[in-house]
Amino acid sequence: MLITLPAAMSVAAEAGEPALTTPGKPYSTKSVWEYSNVGEPPIPPVEPLIEVGLRDTAVTRGADGNYYMTGTIGPDFMTANEGIPLWRSPDLKNWEYLGLVWTFERDGTWQKEWTVKNGVRRRAVWAPEIHHLRGTFFITYSITGLGTGILRSTTGRPEGPYVSAHTPDAPLTSGIDASLFVEDDGAVYFVFGSGYLARLKDDLSALAEDPVRLRCTPADTDIEHHHPARPCRMDQFDHVGYEGVFLFKRNGRYYLSGAERYYERYHCMTAESTTLRGPYSARYVSVPHAGHNTFFQDHEGRWWSTMFGNDPQAPIQKRPGILPVKFDANGHIVPVVAGQPWTPRKRS
Image 1 (cartoon, rainbow, N blue to C red):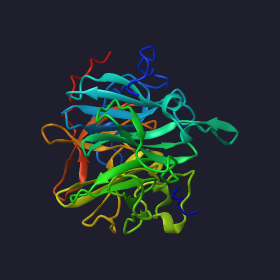
Image 2 (cartoon, rainbow, N blue to C red):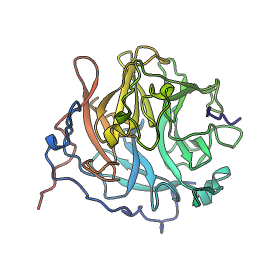
Image 3 (cartoon, rainbow, N blue to C red):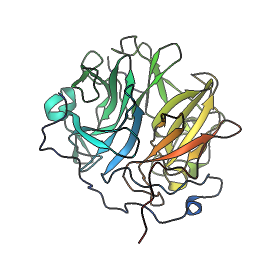
Image 4 (cartoon, one colour):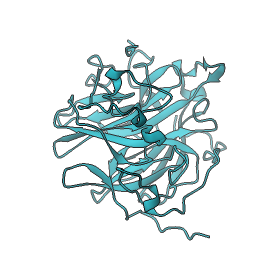
């Protein structure tokens, strides 16, 4: 049943790695302090992992020790693309393109439908995330105008092929930006939109409960801290972000993040709680310019945030990047202003 919120392996060889289809600087020559704004932490210079247009960058570490990366590809990102891309890396430096592991034409069912918004036809996969659990890979995703879903690899391999993990083969929920969270007891939760949460059935075939909205207390009522084109009602100022939600747990503390147009930038906002369903703390800017990101640990246990750059002041523009983060004395997420996994390029 579709929950509506209130108000084959890689593709054929001739389909190469997605091209860089968006204009913008490949990296920035600004110093770290030029990204710092009043009340926001500084971030280090960030360079793209690969020169490919990619939004909503998501990275995870598989049981095989490799890192896997996916996200929203072009050519038009928001309106049309072919499917879900995947890259693999042993070290966060060298990335191998595995192809489109799911496509509309080869694998789609309900997802094939085109929708229209403001006179524009749309059919795109938004914000896929890859997760490894229960011996296989799952991909969460959303389809423009239709809703969210979960795919399961039938082989246990990251390349798939992938089929719908849930029944019936229809959108799992309305909304966008889906993710998974695994609790200590093994229960798997579906997280999506601006911070909705619902436990999944043990086999991930459906939601086991109605979604609830995770709320921040106190709410952030400063309108300049919210998307200017999407004004909130007073009862909606308590979200962590208007999209791009992600949830993880560390040392008994839950970290809920989301993307927000904070002073018209595209920041990662984070709130924290000692209980899964909250209430969560007041939100704060954890990683500037890194809205709609994921957090992950490397082989040495260090924490990283993904980034793709979605505002003019971001160090990269619609390209995949990562930057190291740490937890301060209060347990809050802050960027590390050093420690990229690559050798910086020479600036001309």
